[in-house]
Length: 159
Image (cartoon, rainbow, N blue to C red; front, top):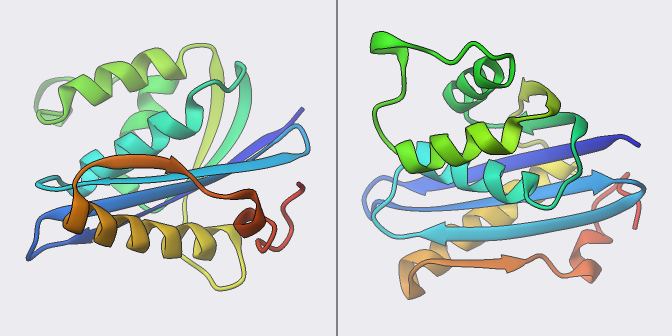
């Protein structure tokens, strides 16, 4: 059973709002969610997306492509049992880092930094992250599933 996760985030500096989206392929099935918040940070959006993507996922190997390099590096260290210490340890979003530490237990994640690319799961997730950012700016915090008909449009994903 292999699992692949593609995560993209979107942040608006002027409005301090952000959105995230993930697409997940697990056990020959695709799923995804999008969400966002007002008064947030890019790091918080990446952490929220990663936590949402790992939720309800069985332990084991997982390939994660994410657009936030700092979160990817720190999460990889945590998963390897070498969390950053001292001045390299996270100082913000400690609630999410603690939840992520618990979520990574028993997993063998392989992290890669991935920018959005057209006609791919990263491009699809980036479009949903931008939509989520705008919705959060207008209506406040939310999380919702990406509809299956939309997921069916992602090239290479099993449904």
